Image 1 (cartoon, one colour):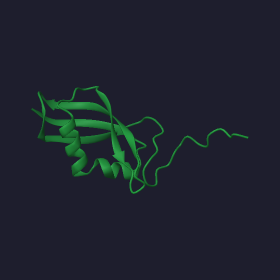
Image 2 (image 1 turned 90 degrees about the vertical axis):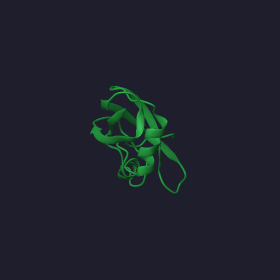
Image 3 (image 1 turned 30 degrees about the vertical axis):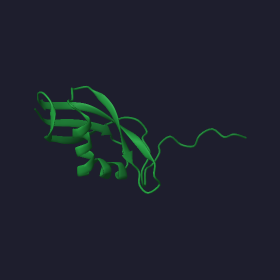
Image 4 (image 1 turned 135 degrees about the vertical axis):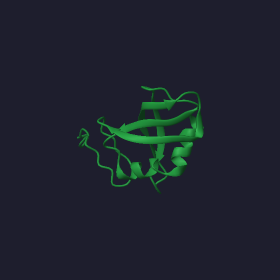
Length: 104
């Protein structure tokens, strides 16, 4: 059984996004939808952005795996940051991309 998995997310994930991935339901979702994890694996999961009814994807990278075999209810999910991308989305999210081209 996999006892612990460490997933990294972009360091510019919004405070709202961080709050969402820290919830028990989100961690349970990760354990239910992944039979196993392998170091270096990359995947995206959607995250609710609030009452506006939309979502955005968060890119995760599996940084470390303890144990072997399958993910279970007891598998601990830990997060760390990694420097990457200009992620926006969620309440109070800040885009670092700047304005797009003008159409005049």
